[in-house]
Image 1 (cartoon, one colour):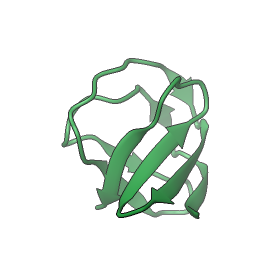
Image 2 (cartoon, one colour):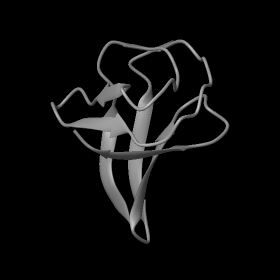
Image 3 (cartoon, helix red, strand yellow):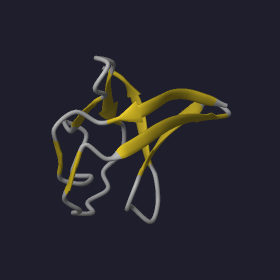
Length: 72
C-alpha cells in the first residue's frame, strides 16, 4: 500500500544512516530506519513510501533498492 508519493525536496544524495531525513516537496518528512549506504545524486527525484506489513519502505527514482523508513 502506498503511504506517501511525490517528489523529494531539493538535493537527494542517497541513503546514509539512521539520521538521514527525506522531505517530500509537500512537507512530510521520513527518517531512515536502518543503516544502508548507497550514494546517488538527484535533484527532486520522484519517490514513494510503501507499507509492507509492519515496515515502510522508501523507493526513490534511480535507486536499485529501497530503504526502511519511519515518520520523522
